[in-house]
Length: 353
Image 1 (tube, rainbow, N blue to C red):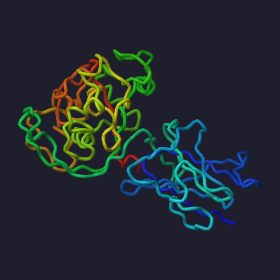
Image 2: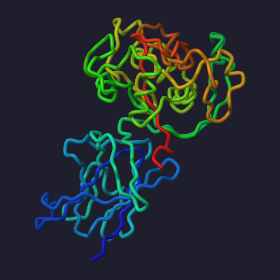
Image 3: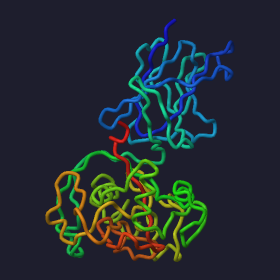
Image 4: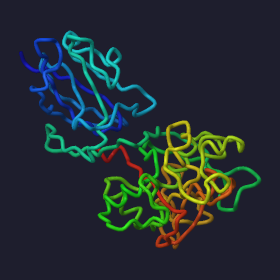
């Protein structure tokens, strides 16, 4: 019987697919495992991975076997569209990370976060899908950027409306281990050295280089603030507007004990981003200009065309609450390094084309 096409519509995951033929006992026969041929296309914020499954394929499992467990990738449920439902069960009947009922032709999707990238053969040639495991999808939208309150600093005003396209952002700050691996470094540049801690004491140029080598980029200042605000919510800090609750979301001078901490140890904001306030300041792509907010672009602002300093956002382990607000801006030379400064990377959906 000819193969029937099953289309996996997911968001933001580099996945490896293995097909298992059904054994005589109704369970997958591991000896028949084979990789699926797939095509990659994009439409708006959605990745479509189309592969062929024969009628006796029992399920799809992660590859390699030590890949990460299933993970919700966006605020929206994964969707599997099936052309012939008599052969395959729809997505809503087969939860992500689980197989279909015994004897059925179920589907199993799992995030393969140990794969940095997957070269996948498409109908019009090879295409490369960047692994976005560990990233959060940030939905397009508009928000008021800057601080309209009386306690604002001069470079936080005027508050102004900005509209952004969708993008992905690392859920956590880049770790020391990841930085050394991608940059090919033997020496750890960080002051506070330990597995799992964020990399710090890196320049803007080093941060930008890392993101580029990883197939990503630094976020713009507008993207960073929009994401920290959980797609534009008007909170003072990332995750909360309450000073009493801030310790649950941010490492800062009152609770950090004079050092960085492992990203993700505290609560995330409403879209799943950790440590957007506190822990380490984060380099963004933009040059700094104190009056830039007065003539900022309305759509996807990129910052001034040139300058002498770059912008950092989010505040650090060594800052008081006022200086870790989502609107607070720091300006430093792009060659400057200290233990307060780290970063995370962003990715545009267009990178998948």
